[in-house]
Length: 58
Image (tube, rainbow, N blue to C red; front, side, top):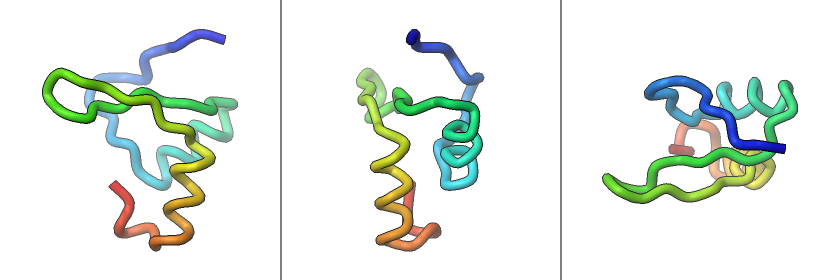
């Protein structure tokens, strides 16, 4: 398993997360500010989307 870039300026949304998970992606790195990143589990992201409602997930 390795980290692979998805593309420039791809925003993590419910639909993008579903498409990535369908391709076998389990974790993504997202920007958490100007100079920092964090790792996000797609499973936890999608679970939170279901609980909160799709429109509230960033």
